[in-house]
Amino acid sequence: MLIIPAIDLQNGDAVRLYQGDYNQKTIYSNNPVEIALGFQQMGAKYLHVVDLDGAKGGNTANIETIRKIRAAIDIPMQLGGGVRTAETVAMYLEMGINRVILGTIAVVNPDFVAEMIALHGAEKIVVGVDARGGKVSTGGWLADSTLDYLDFIDSLKNMGVQYIVVTDISKDGSLTSPNWEMYEQIFSQSGINFVVSGGVANEEHLIHAAAQGYYATIVGKAYYEGRVDLQKCIKELSHA
Image (cartoon, rainbow, N blue to C red; front, side):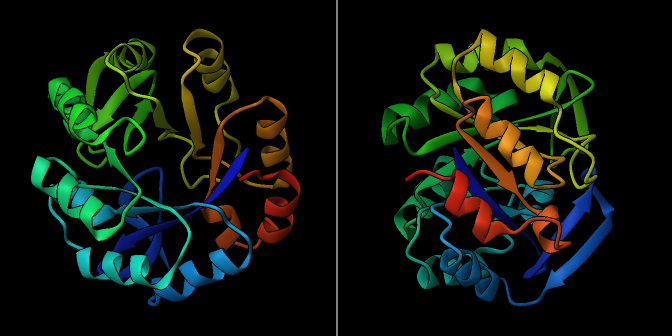
């Protein structure tokens, strides 16, 4: 299993939100590049970056910080938040981002996902599935849809999507536990490569996800709050 450390960006700072609430945030560093380099030195084989301002406004608010992170590290990097046009996808890929995560646009315009896969390949296009109460959320988690998350995942798989990042918003930043029931449903019903995101609080959660055979797990707040020995977990649980 891949263990993927996360950096969430707002106003150029590395922050974490609580349950997607932009009014409940903690600033962990004003130097995200330094954090990214630290993750690489710990042995991380992938980095997850989210432009929170972009997710909320549908823009590329933190592009300069993202550009600096990409230039500083050698490991692969996936990026999400506000990616809603073909031009933005192409720009990030040309910048050296390895995988671009589509969120809101994948819900409101599924054809766009298929177009991006046809243009760039399924290896480079990831879809973020953000769920609350079993329904998919959009717009930086500020709006809920009536779309069932399992139905949505089935439709993504049918159009050729190979990688998704699945977040239970109620668990995100809570340091409680991932929604294991949700992930087990996805694992048993879809067979798609999914990334566990939200709720990881300790090393036991990472061990559990690895034992289940899940593709990857994102670690954010648990690392920033000192609850996970990231270097140890990467060494013991990660694969290339």
